[in-house]
Amino acid sequence: MSERGVQRLLGSVPVDEQAARRAWEIVRAAYAEREPRRSRRRRSSVALVLAAVAAAAAAAVLSPPGRAVVNAVRRSIGIEHAQPALFRLPAPGRLLVAGGSGAWIVADDGSKRRLGDYPQASWSPHALYVVAAAANELAAVEPTGRVHWTLARPQIRFPRWGGTRSDTRIAYFTAGRLHIVAGDGTGDVAAQGLAAAAPVPPAWEPTTGDRHVLAYVTARGRVTVLDADSGNVQWVSAAYAGPRALAWSPDGTQLALAAKTRVIVFDARTGHATAIRAGGVRALAFAPDGQLALLRSHEVLLRAGGLLHTLFVPPGGRLSGLVWSPDSRWLLTELPAADEWVFLQVRGGRRILAVSHIAAQFGAFPSLSGWAS
Image 1 (cartoon, rainbow, N blue to C red):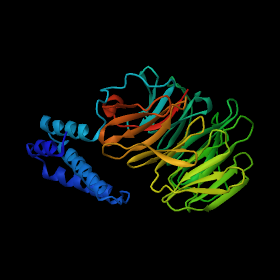
Image 2: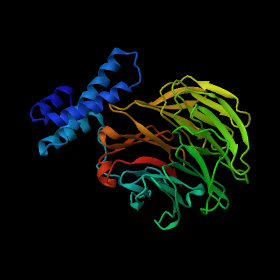
Image 3: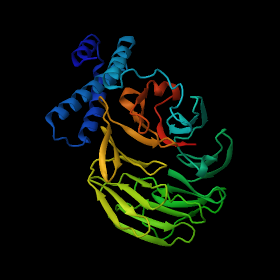
Image 4: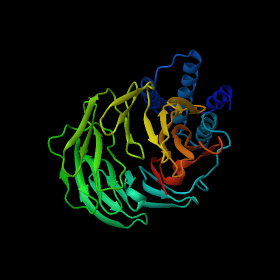
């Protein structure tokens, strides 16, 4: 729908002034956090999208005409010809998502199973279990929903499970401090002598041996790599402003950090750093075959041959979340303002598959937590 068409729809709906003021405060805060744009045309398009989102938020408190406006705005910033529901995944595997309606597993045929009231979740090695967390509870859960054990701790954030099929560890933060517990729920300890953590999920080194190596970012923006069994620190990086995401390459040789103004790729053995000129990256993910994808608010990038290539730019709205399919052929990202998931084909073609009405299918719009085989 054109901008003028949206304006006509908005003009026909009596807007609640208090709702409009609340919506404007939300949009103004989002606009203040936007990434700088050099192009006047780009700034103009972002402003139009923000205006449309403000109108949709105000209209959402209204009756059927308000919902009609929301649907019109969704169409104006979403992907054209999006499927009305998730009928199936475009690649084999199981998708893990979590949010306000709990943690869910989505099978490749589109069927969904709710695991419980857990707004945070991630896969165990080989996707045999899920580590899930509520505000004050950590739990190990089977993909069937059966709970194996729970652990009560305050202010749990970012649980991550690493190790081998038979010997695993779980790292999580509580009140900004790193904790590590065995995969069977025993031996929970707070890491001693380490700096407080930044609000960035920790990352386990992929391994097939008996090593349990963990990377996390300190509150001062330093990447710290340590042996989780002995507690010995292997190396600590320089400080980087605005750390946002951390990821290991699948072979364990590289560790990537998304910071405010650039992405840094470390040699995992020595800590030697190489900078990628890519500011504003909010998420990054290595594919199982080693490809590195980066997510900005309005762009998905792919690194190939040392160069960055734009893979996808949405019609409008901010992107969030980034996960690879197990076969490295598809990337999945989210377009929350349009209530859509967007599947991007990376190999074997360049198709874009969008699925709408995500919030209705899960009870709330969830965050992507992993796509496993």
